[in-house]
Length: 397
Ligand code: CTP
Image (cartoon, rainbow, N blue to C red; front, side, top):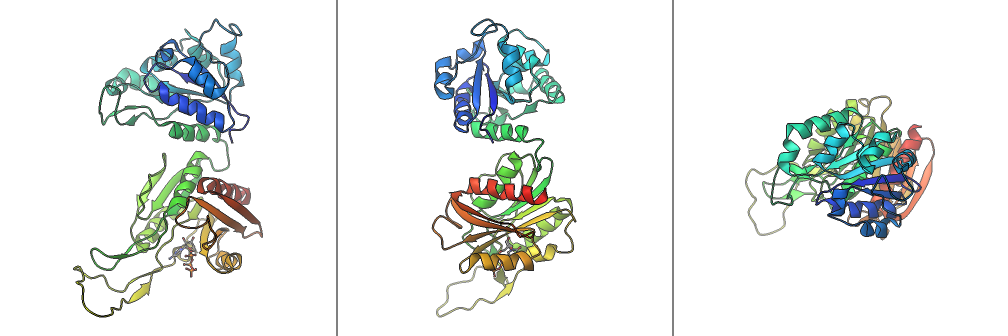
């Protein structure tokens, strides 16, 4: 995705400039060519040598140095994306006014490329109507604004907006901007993730070992591809990915309800959750005390959510099921593809090391209804998520 892309990273004078070093390094590691432009203020916080060390390229700073006075035109024209992080209130004001009094503002005025800004400033400065008006103007001109977020500021704790978004989140926004013409851009994607929990009594539950990681990675990757993502999640300890709408559920019936409500508006359903297939026939009102001897728990089946969507699916919707198998995984997966009327199924063999619930990697086979079959070898769940979305895009093409 980033290989061969050119990014101009403008850095302005805020304490969050140190975060931009990580952003520059992350982009470079992903294969992008990163030209850093520092304002005078930025140099007070982080020097050019640091950025040059992580980008392996000269840092620009003035309209008048290096290759001469045309940097602002050539750099801006060659870039696939301009990122300004951190963007101070002063930079927003200068950009909104169309000023061109240094290399960064001149470049922003001269560029035809998409612009992403990550504001960072004192919370009062951010809340000030002048700053808000400048941001509204810049948004109206098509710029994308990432953050700021709430959290500690340089001058101390704050629960108000002002802090720069973390570098990996800015990177997510950057990818979303670049992919805004891609096949999933603007599509409504629903991802289910994690286990469900079926109560036995007010304190005990039946559940499974699903961590939710595969679903969370899928939601994150789909959002980066420009989709509007709803993540319906069973109980997990994971941090929700930036940008997605999170719906929390507990039981399989709640999951079924949330999927049913989202269904009419859904373009792609990725059913990565591991819903409990059974629940206790009755839920005890009080905590069951310990008693001597064996105990029997009567279980009844929950509804099969994918099956129950048949007949209610929008005609153009793509339905992706997941199967965790222990026997002949591909044959069992193929049967589920048919029986649940799926477009694609992602199969993993729970007994293979590096695959399944508790690890951050996966090995999968992706089958589709048209006869496609792809083996995805051992890799991180984030990379498997990309392979799954590539398969979905190809299938819908
Ligand atoms: N699934 C579902 N509703 C359930 C259970 C599972 O929609 N009550 C979905 C899962 O989210 C997954 C797919 O069905 O996308 C296959 O899940 P899996 O547990 O492998 O299949 P089951 O149909 O439950 O079959 P079995 O457990 O017998 O292998």
